[in-house]
Length: 361
Ligand SMILES: NC(=O)c1ccc[n+]([C@@H]2O[C@H](COP(=O)([O-])OP(=O)(O)OC[C@H]3O[C@@H](n4cnc5c(N)ncnc54)[C@H](O)[C@@H]3O)[C@@H](O)[C@H]2O)c1
Image 1 (tube, protein in one colour):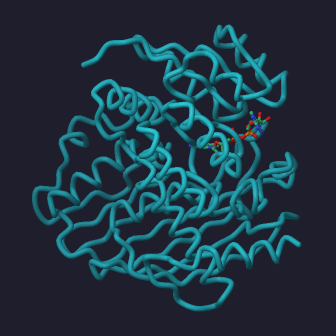
Image 2 (spheres, rainbow, N blue to C red):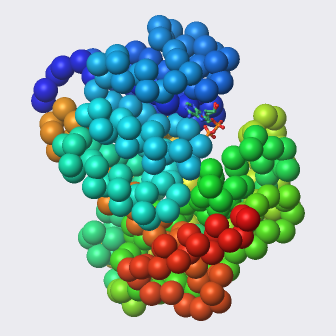
């Protein structure tokens, strides 16, 4: 493996940025050399906490640092612009979820990555949770038999304050609230486990927050393999409470995969509530009780991305993979607005964009 030193820059120094810095700083021959935030204080704080020497309020100045990789931790509506600029400067890009806020942006990002010969990786850290990998492994070994149902329930709670920073809960910067910000991880997992998707019927609604977009969504899914699925997601659900800052105690989210020969239910992302198969189902990781001792999934995913860059291999969850949950999200919005089932591939994204622009006016 190529052991050269990778120089990394971080754009956006808010809540998620420390997960990236800590992941990079645990790796050998990787150095975070600079950060950027439009809020000078945020940039300085991140530098001082993690011993980083360079900060700027203009992310383009990071391009002068001879960087190899840029990690993008800005509000989701800015992922597109910051990624495109970085890729055009021949930097590999690691972008937080969701990849972008519409399919036009995502497609241009994927195209630019190919054209500039740089990699584009999306952070869907829950794919690296141990239970998620175990489910994928069981699916690959066909332990579930015929898949019948898959479901994801994200019944969370957020205060109005959570949305006060100007970008969360908006169409243009958040990409539409509950689905883009919170549930997107489970949109990604559900399609990763059971996809490709055949059709969706969705409904979005705003219940308890004064926000532009939705705090609640449901979807009925049909997959090409014949199985059916359900997604329920909300940030309006009691009981839930704020623990401090923007840390909340929520009802645990759950994902379930149910087949004719086996079923798995995972709660709170790490807790396997049910793992039962007619045959060969007792996973070695459960036997060894290693499940609670895993490292952070951000760390594992970022390590895997850097390893792939070193070996000049495809990165895990590249732009095309990152696009899949975005396509599902956009199809749910469109279905909700036109009150009809929507088929995949979803080709009405431009029309959806017009509906959203009309709503914002
Ligand atoms: N993987 C996960 O579990 C996870 C968790 C939280 C957030 N996220 C994603 O990370 C991204 C950021 O979310 P957050 O919660 O950290 O938000 P945040 O508001 O806490 O931080 C965003 C930071 O970006 C800065 N910023 C805004 N415009 C900028 C610009 N043009 N240049 C440089 N900095 C700019 C803001 O000042 C702010 O400090 C979002 O896309 C979100 O979906 C992912």
